[in-house]
Image (tube, rainbow, N blue to C red):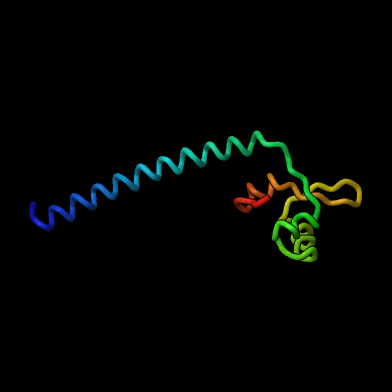
Length: 94
């Protein structure tokens, strides 16, 4: 096989592999979305958010106030819903 044909065959094989990986990623994304939908809410305090590394208390409270961090309020207490946070900003470490 000549060099250009070998390169073309290799490119086609790579493209097939990438396409297969894309299908696997799509299937995993659907599975993760379904799992998250079935999870109960995980309400945590601002102090716990600081422990998880999401910023300082002032930053977290500011992001809650401007709506970038979803929360649940019970009277004067504020709890951040980690499940809702994960769906709006990606993975969350616990």
